[in-house]
Image (cartoon, rainbow, N blue to C red; front, side, top):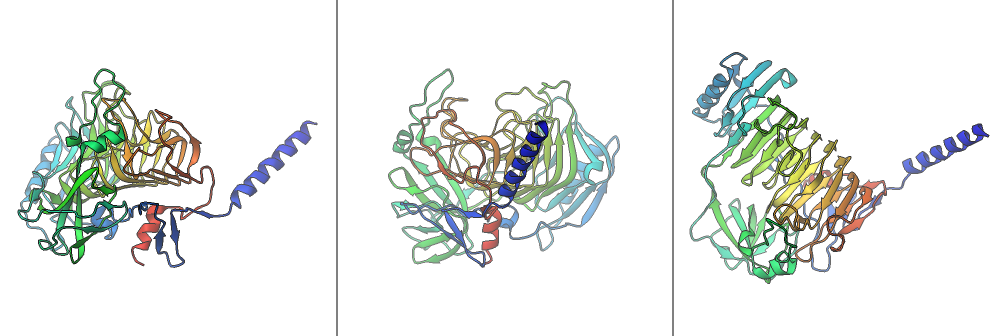
Length: 500
């Protein structure tokens, strides 16, 4: 009898495996990929389509990250921290080559105690180690990044270029922006598409009705002032065409919209941090008087972090500030955080900038492992990343991130895009035009905000959850627990389609 049960069970498992492996490929209703790789998007009733996420990362992902020649070598020793900083400062004064680089500083294998921090504030510098054999240890008790990469200042509007957007509605995913006058612009200009909220938008989102608890702050329209950085690709009459799409609909009843050219004299570029192992000294598993980030970047465009491992930090492996753009974070890992497990800690890979790419990264023992913060202007992409031993969820964290793709993310925890209500100080709606594509999670909540766009969950392997406030509108779900989604990666398909 027992033999028969075992045989029957083996047959059942065999048939289940055969059935799974022979699953027919299926395609999302939101797009069609042609035989030559071109993509045709299916618009909704308002003309919104899935955004094109392909132009993110270093130089919009269209140029390989270069192998910059070494010009200075530093070895371990009692004065290594000073030697590294002196090498960076000396290189900062040298002229850049025709490609915008000054050179790479190589840290030989060994251990480098860093009592303060390493600072890079000039363009064209690469800090490179010998992989796991080069270990930087953040010593001391100060909460700071171990490696701080940042330019200076803020974007400056160019006088007499500001012009209103004339369309009452521009759908998400579109790149054509009609304006009152295009006379001040030319192709190649860097511009800001400025979306400023009206009070009606806050009211229709019901973010002036967050259930109060101590510390809760209702949303204020003046705080939702989005500045999308874009480049003009061509001009037809008074229509500007931009390189990256609108990632939240422009809607005259909810916002004013203008375009203006800008400069950013203090922003740096062509900076890389690569092939390093980083760790923070700590006194206990819940200690917080030590380094919080392995690498922090802000006021930078066209940079990268790759092949970095980070252990024992309180916050992140990589933390990108709101004025970071076109950064690639590749093949990096974050593990074994040392902090209290509560809010504002353990954001393993944190993005607050725009047009940034996180690819092939892993996290363990974090909270919000692949995450965006408040008022984040997309597009941004997390692709082929894994999280384990999670203590909280993956996704947009709070207060309205726009246009993020979570593509082939695998987690033993949750992926959530929802109204977070009065969590924190009134997190509210976490994001819009967020796309969860072919991901695997224990469970997921994907809801649509009351107005201004949708959120998508396509091909999820995992349980569907009601989330923080189950009464909110359901998101756009398709193919839950249905293997065989094609294309398997939306990001890679869109990247391929750029050449068509």
